[in-house]
Length: 85
Image 1 (tube, rainbow, N blue to C red):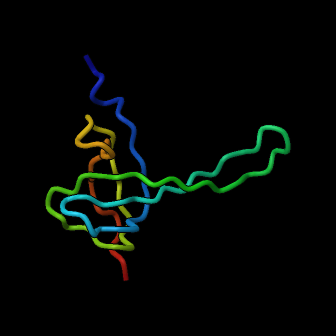
Image 2: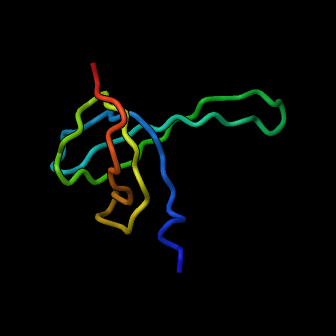
Image 3: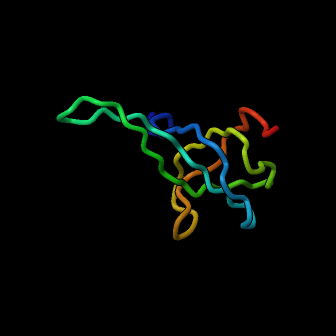
């Protein structure tokens, strides 16, 4: 019954906040190439639910996996780690 604690968490930067109660978070992942062994940066964008519309572009945030909230949203905002300057 501890399935709730197994939800994935990601840390990324808010790249868009133009939608109502929705933010777009860009997450950078370092991945090793399977043959050559070189580490490469890959970015992926996640649509996340921001209930209070408190975050702004450039903020570093933590998001957590949740049930599907719309066609694209499967993540929700947990906390704002660092504000944009």
